[in-house]
Amino acid sequence: MGDFSTWLKLSADISSSTWTNFQCPECQKETVDFQYVGDTETRIGYLEIWCDSCLKGIHISRVRVPESANLLSFEDKNLIGNRIPAFKQVVR
Image 1 (cartoon, helix red, strand yellow):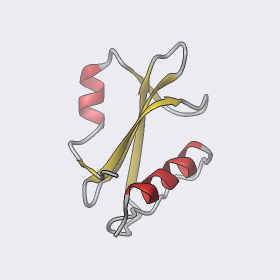
Image 2: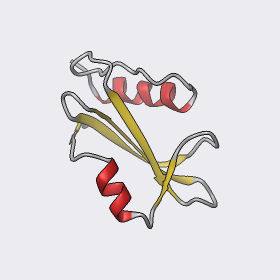
Image 3: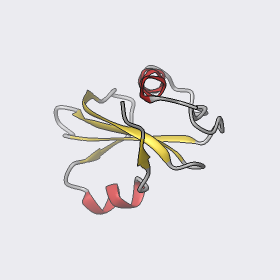
């Protein structure tokens, strides 16, 4: 079973990769998804990572969003709500 540090390592893979099939540290399925949310000018924000199968994941605040990454603006509350499911956060 995954812990916070395993999810944190996954976040490093996400931010440095164009690969999209990430394995969930909890259920081992390749159904991990993620979304950056932040300021579109500074590209500073937060990262949500979750598994679509078991609905577990993590929230990482204060991240620099890679130029190539999809970024939702802080102001797009409806888009954020529709894009990111209510997942159970894995804690430290």
